[in-house]
Length: 208
Image 1: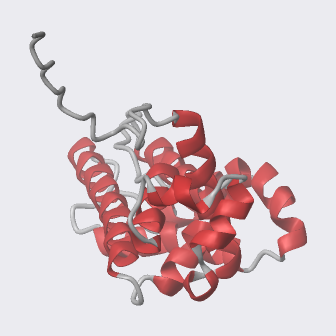
Image 2: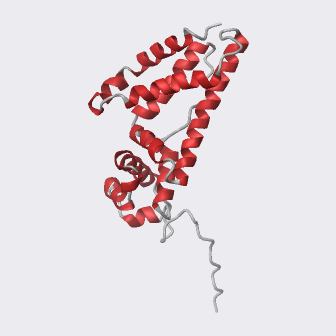
Protein backbone atom coordinates (compact mmCIF):
# COMPACT_ATOMS: atom_id res chain seq x y z
CA UNK A 1 0.00 0.00 0.00
CA UNK A 2 1.47 3.33 -1.05
CA UNK A 3 2.13 6.05 1.50
CA UNK A 4 -0.30 8.93 1.69
CA UNK A 5 1.35 12.06 0.22
CA UNK A 6 1.86 14.88 2.67
CA UNK A 7 -0.23 18.01 2.07
CA UNK A 8 1.66 21.17 1.23
CA UNK A 9 1.06 24.44 3.04
CA UNK A 10 -1.19 26.73 1.02
CA UNK A 11 0.19 29.95 -0.44
CA UNK A 12 -2.06 32.59 1.10
CA UNK A 13 -1.20 35.06 -1.66
CA UNK A 14 -2.57 32.74 -4.32
CA UNK A 15 -6.13 32.39 -5.58
CA UNK A 16 -8.52 29.55 -4.75
CA UNK A 17 -6.87 27.24 -7.34
CA UNK A 18 -3.38 28.00 -6.07
CA UNK A 19 -2.56 30.49 -8.82
CA UNK A 20 -0.43 33.49 -7.75
CA UNK A 21 -2.02 36.92 -7.94
CA UNK A 22 -1.43 38.84 -11.14
CA UNK A 23 0.38 42.15 -10.45
CA UNK A 24 -1.08 43.60 -13.65
CA UNK A 25 -4.61 42.96 -12.40
CA UNK A 26 -3.71 44.46 -9.01
CA UNK A 27 -2.45 47.56 -10.81
CA UNK A 28 -5.62 47.90 -12.90
CA UNK A 29 -7.83 47.56 -9.85
CA UNK A 30 -5.98 50.09 -7.69
CA UNK A 31 -5.84 52.57 -10.58
CA UNK A 32 -9.57 52.15 -11.18
CA UNK A 33 -10.30 52.51 -7.46
CA UNK A 34 -8.36 55.78 -7.27
CA UNK A 35 -10.18 57.11 -10.35
CA UNK A 36 -13.65 56.17 -9.09
CA UNK A 37 -12.94 57.66 -5.65
CA UNK A 38 -11.58 60.85 -7.19
CA UNK A 39 -14.61 61.26 -9.45
CA UNK A 40 -17.40 60.16 -7.11
CA UNK A 41 -16.16 60.44 -3.52
CA UNK A 42 -16.71 57.93 -0.76
CA UNK A 43 -20.51 58.09 -0.86
CA UNK A 44 -20.64 56.64 -4.40
CA UNK A 45 -17.51 54.52 -4.19
CA UNK A 46 -18.53 50.87 -4.70
CA UNK A 47 -16.83 47.60 -5.54
CA UNK A 48 -19.20 47.28 -8.51
CA UNK A 49 -18.07 50.58 -10.02
CA UNK A 50 -14.40 49.74 -9.50
CA UNK A 51 -14.85 46.29 -11.08
CA UNK A 52 -16.50 47.82 -14.15
CA UNK A 53 -13.77 50.45 -14.51
CA UNK A 54 -10.99 47.87 -14.12
CA UNK A 55 -12.68 45.33 -16.41
CA UNK A 56 -12.63 42.55 -13.82
CA UNK A 57 -15.22 40.60 -11.89
CA UNK A 58 -16.14 41.51 -8.33
CA UNK A 59 -14.78 38.14 -7.24
CA UNK A 60 -11.30 39.21 -8.35
CA UNK A 61 -11.52 42.20 -6.03
CA UNK A 62 -12.90 40.29 -3.05
CA UNK A 63 -10.14 37.70 -3.42
CA UNK A 64 -7.70 40.52 -2.74
CA UNK A 65 -9.54 42.82 -0.32
CA UNK A 66 -12.39 41.95 2.06
CA UNK A 67 -14.38 45.18 1.64
CA UNK A 68 -14.40 48.55 -0.06
CA UNK A 69 -12.59 50.23 2.85
CA UNK A 70 -9.61 47.91 2.46
CA UNK A 71 -9.74 48.32 -1.33
CA UNK A 72 -9.61 52.11 -1.12
CA UNK A 73 -6.84 52.05 1.49
CA UNK A 74 -4.76 49.82 -0.80
CA UNK A 75 -5.45 52.06 -3.80
CA UNK A 76 -4.40 55.21 -1.95
CA UNK A 77 -1.24 53.53 -0.64
CA UNK A 78 -0.33 52.41 -4.17
CA UNK A 79 -1.22 55.64 -5.99
CA UNK A 80 -0.55 58.50 -3.57
CA UNK A 81 3.00 58.73 -2.32
CA UNK A 82 4.30 60.92 0.45
CA UNK A 83 6.89 63.66 0.01
CA UNK A 84 10.44 62.40 -0.34
CA UNK A 85 13.26 64.02 1.62
CA UNK A 86 14.86 66.83 -0.34
CA UNK A 87 18.42 68.15 -0.03
CA UNK A 88 19.66 69.95 -3.14
CA UNK A 89 22.11 72.15 -1.27
CA UNK A 90 20.09 75.39 -1.32
CA UNK A 91 16.84 76.33 0.37
CA UNK A 92 15.44 77.79 -2.85
CA UNK A 93 15.87 74.58 -4.83
CA UNK A 94 14.70 72.49 -1.86
CA UNK A 95 11.43 74.43 -1.62
CA UNK A 96 10.92 74.42 -5.39
CA UNK A 97 11.31 70.65 -5.37
CA UNK A 98 8.85 70.41 -2.45
CA UNK A 99 6.28 72.54 -4.31
CA UNK A 100 6.77 70.47 -7.47
CA UNK A 101 6.21 67.20 -5.62
CA UNK A 102 3.02 68.50 -4.05
CA UNK A 103 1.76 69.78 -7.38
CA UNK A 104 2.41 66.41 -9.03
CA UNK A 105 0.37 64.69 -6.33
CA UNK A 106 -2.63 66.91 -7.14
CA UNK A 107 -2.24 67.21 -10.92
CA UNK A 108 -1.00 63.72 -11.75
CA UNK A 109 -2.90 60.57 -12.64
CA UNK A 110 -4.43 60.25 -9.17
CA UNK A 111 -4.73 63.97 -8.49
CA UNK A 112 -8.50 63.92 -8.11
CA UNK A 113 -8.20 61.17 -5.52
CA UNK A 114 -5.68 63.28 -3.60
CA UNK A 115 -8.10 66.20 -3.52
CA UNK A 116 -11.10 64.01 -2.64
CA UNK A 117 -9.06 62.51 0.17
CA UNK A 118 -9.23 65.83 1.99
CA UNK A 119 -13.02 65.89 1.69
CA UNK A 120 -13.73 62.35 2.87
CA UNK A 121 -10.92 61.87 5.37
CA UNK A 122 -13.20 62.20 8.39
CA UNK A 123 -15.70 59.62 7.12
CA UNK A 124 -13.44 56.61 6.72
CA UNK A 125 -10.72 55.73 9.26
CA UNK A 126 -8.54 54.06 6.61
CA UNK A 127 -8.69 57.18 4.47
CA UNK A 128 -8.06 59.49 7.41
CA UNK A 129 -4.94 57.56 8.39
CA UNK A 130 -3.53 57.86 4.87
CA UNK A 131 -4.13 61.62 4.78
CA UNK A 132 -2.37 61.99 8.11
CA UNK A 133 0.65 60.12 6.73
CA UNK A 134 0.76 62.35 3.65
CA UNK A 135 0.54 65.50 5.73
CA UNK A 136 3.21 64.24 8.11
CA UNK A 137 5.57 63.61 5.19
CA UNK A 138 5.09 67.25 4.10
CA UNK A 139 5.80 68.55 7.60
CA UNK A 140 8.91 66.41 8.04
CA UNK A 141 10.29 67.42 4.64
CA UNK A 142 9.64 71.13 5.27
CA UNK A 143 11.12 70.97 8.77
CA UNK A 144 14.32 69.36 7.46
CA UNK A 145 14.57 71.96 4.68
CA UNK A 146 14.21 74.87 7.11
CA UNK A 147 16.67 73.47 9.65
CA UNK A 148 19.35 72.91 7.01
CA UNK A 149 18.76 76.39 5.59
CA UNK A 150 19.13 77.97 9.04
CA UNK A 151 22.34 76.01 9.63
CA UNK A 152 23.69 77.26 6.27
CA UNK A 153 22.73 80.85 7.14
CA UNK A 154 20.18 81.10 4.33
CA UNK A 155 17.20 81.70 6.62
CA UNK A 156 16.78 83.63 9.84
CA UNK A 157 17.02 81.50 13.00
CA UNK A 158 13.44 82.40 13.96
CA UNK A 159 11.93 81.22 10.67
CA UNK A 160 8.63 79.43 11.35
CA UNK A 161 8.34 75.98 9.80
CA UNK A 162 4.56 76.16 10.17
CA UNK A 163 4.19 79.46 8.33
CA UNK A 164 6.62 78.42 5.62
CA UNK A 165 4.75 75.16 5.09
CA UNK A 166 1.40 76.99 5.06
CA UNK A 167 2.65 79.39 2.42
CA UNK A 168 4.21 76.82 0.10
CA UNK A 169 1.81 73.90 0.51
CA UNK A 170 -1.23 76.12 0.93
CA UNK A 171 -0.27 78.16 -2.12
CA UNK A 172 0.02 75.02 -4.25
CA UNK A 173 -3.28 73.61 -2.98
CA UNK A 174 -5.15 76.87 -3.56
CA UNK A 175 -3.67 77.14 -7.06
CA UNK A 176 -4.95 73.66 -7.93
CA UNK A 177 -8.38 74.13 -6.33
CA UNK A 178 -8.92 77.43 -8.13
CA UNK A 179 -8.19 75.86 -11.51
CA UNK A 180 -11.26 74.97 -13.62
CA UNK A 181 -11.22 71.33 -14.84
CA UNK A 182 -10.72 72.35 -18.47
CA UNK A 183 -7.51 74.19 -17.55
CA UNK A 184 -5.88 71.40 -15.51
CA UNK A 185 -3.62 70.32 -18.37
CA UNK A 186 -2.50 73.90 -18.91
CA UNK A 187 -1.74 74.35 -15.21
CA UNK A 188 0.14 71.04 -15.13
CA UNK A 189 2.27 72.17 -18.08
CA UNK A 190 3.26 75.34 -16.22
CA UNK A 191 3.67 73.68 -12.81
CA UNK A 192 7.45 74.12 -12.60
CA UNK A 193 7.25 77.82 -13.43
CA UNK A 194 4.55 78.33 -10.82
CA UNK A 195 6.56 76.47 -8.17
CA UNK A 196 9.56 78.71 -8.84
CA UNK A 197 7.50 81.92 -8.71
CA UNK A 198 5.75 80.83 -5.50
CA UNK A 199 8.96 79.93 -3.70
CA UNK A 200 10.71 83.14 -4.75
CA UNK A 201 7.76 85.14 -3.41
CA UNK A 202 7.77 83.27 -0.08
CA UNK A 203 11.53 83.55 0.35
CA UNK A 204 11.48 87.30 -0.18
CA UNK A 205 10.20 87.66 3.39
CA UNK A 206 12.28 84.95 5.06
CA UNK A 207 15.79 85.48 3.78
CA UNK A 208 18.52 85.92 6.36
